[in-house]
Image (cartoon, rainbow, N blue to C red):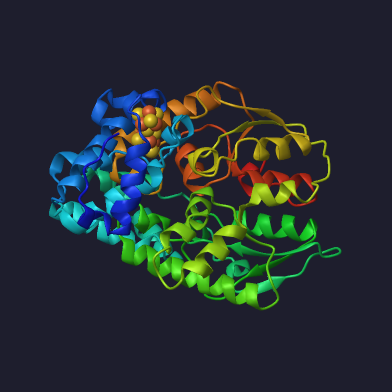
Length: 428
Ligand code: SF4
Ligand code: SF4
């Protein structure tokens, strides 16, 4: 695609990167076929190619974002199915991230929008605040008839019935390997996950220790920055990401780390991109070091020779977009589950997003609900006894519609290798 940025505009590293990306696009439109929002809405402007044109126009003109551009960029899930499909290697993720930051700086949203986004950015990345908000949502549920805004209603609906107690496993400490030590790894314990489902980190720690890892929960780590990054709030995202980089680099320079392990794939995609996010800052080298050893938990487990098991259960595997498209990890979780003995089935159109997508299910509840309905239907059509996924957002989204328990892949692997049966699958 031809672009017309001026030399002056190209001095800005963000514009220079977007220019590179735009020039790679040959506007063939292959990406439209796999874009969930295009499938739901049928509007070219809600397809990757349409959004690319809108972003090009917005950035080239140097003008503030307009309502039409914001509407169609806001409807993008950042599922990155388009990147998997694109034959020209267009890095849509960096382009849409840049567009969102530009929108955040130049566009004045309606008051309710600003208020909701401000609130989400100040609650979700902080487990203590998020826990309080979940309690508030639980209390507020009986009054939902009085709430006029669909987004506020979606927030209430997403609040889980049970809010787990704080897990002390998420505090800074080192869990030694239970057998001979093979690796020393830092576990990213995350933010929203620590309030919504503490079983996932608990199971990960048990499993990794059993597989010969010292598991470090580094002091000072927290939210990866993805939630605010996807809202275009660069300063907030960089602030929380910088804390993680400092925490993990201190461990790397101390006793050393073989990996930074992430069990929420949305966060994993972001941590793997820290090198890019910080490329023009004085933290560039440290950020690149962290990104270089960042791994999804399934990648690490593939290196650790998980023992073969005999679990006899039908599992429908849901591939989170951030895992299959963002990190291009498609087979490892299924291979691991099969190795543990599970029968693994997959839904039709497994490349399509479930509609969770960070805060998308809260900010775009109608589109999200359609995608959820489709995902739950195609998963349940496979007759599973349990659904497994590698991302807490997908688990909550699918769990709010499925008739069988939804667990994290590591919970099943932990169970298959000697850990407790996942609580969500309790039989009594
Ligand atoms: S598939 Fe790639 S090259 Fe083709 S229109 Fe989409 S982004 Fe552009
Ligand atoms: S990220 Fe997903 S929703 Fe956004 S344009 Fe690409 S395929 Fe469509």
